[in-house]
Image (cartoon, rainbow, N blue to C red):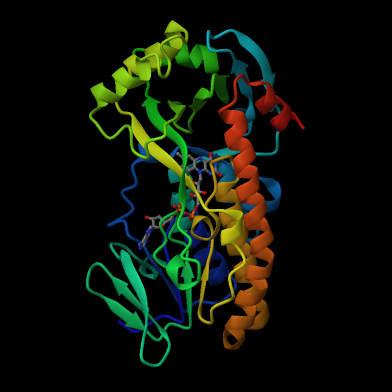
Length: 375
Ligand SMILES: Cc1cc2nc3c(=O)[nH]c(=O)nc-3n(C[C@H](O)[C@H](O)[C@H](O)COP(=O)(O)OP(=O)(O)OC[C@H]3O[C@@H](n4cnc5c(N)ncnc54)[C@H](O)[C@@H]3O)c2cc1C
């Protein structure tokens, strides 16, 4: 297989919008290498993402996909009903925010349909990047494929990027934040569906108390996704079976003193997928630019979840695509240097904002969260 001029590692939102932007701007010699075997993405894995005007929405506009996005975009779902841990309604915020929601698998579907099918190489899990005898990068994949001769490698391969070791002289690795989120879906077959739909309606319901939260959010297909955000010193405390996890969540360490309605969400959960949350540090930004290779999205600046991750990832791709077009294929290193000099401050700001979001989502009460999102 001949090497493409540009190899995009990872077909998440960041890698796919980059591919679409390059394609639409006439830079067509690229391939996306994605670890997943196919686009059989599980809707339960994803959740809903809100896209912001200057970042996610702008990237879609530049990619000529905003009209398609609007077919799925849920403008009514920006409302947050804040309750206390006993379920008493405190306040409603977020009405009319220009941050429409879209399910992750719907966004992926739009992006996948916008580039030629043969430009995505499914089942290609990058294992390592090495330096060849000629000093050029060599890509090694789990399926045995080895590629050299690529002019630009873009690491859009998320939190555990296999491209990152080549740019970070400090060998930056994400650190566990001490917080884990567990997610479940309430489909319309769930006994709690009717009451949840009546209580939450469009948008989300959020309760924050004693360092924990429970958020229930409507999804594109009308189901609800509930996330339990908890403290845990252990990096993987919820690795047992679902009954063990359920008991732990219902114990006095977590939600024993929350309302019966909140606890019913745990009792009726059909699955509880745990995401230990990791972040890079601001000091991990600002590496010396490496010819022929760069990072975008979570691979570059993984931060605590706070509604910015996908937006920042798409903004990175837009900036990189614009720089590649501006400087041309014969001046990719200049394009990368200029892209990175704009990306580093965005990455630092994202990591710092993530820390603020972490502290308010895990606060004693929802006061700081309300103040933050209302400001
Ligand atoms: C529980 C949770 C909730 C979140 N909620 C939100 C939210 O509400 N709003 C928001 O903006 N952000 C949210 N985020 C963050 C958001 O998911 C990320 O910031 C965003 O997906 C980053 O996009 P990306 O394309 O850079 O990385 P990813 O979405 O991680 O995509 C990386 C892609 O690379 C592929 N890949 C990985 N390794 C390899 C490899 N070695 N070889 C080839 N392919 C590989 C993966 O399969 C994947 O397709 C949340 C994150 C989590 C964990």
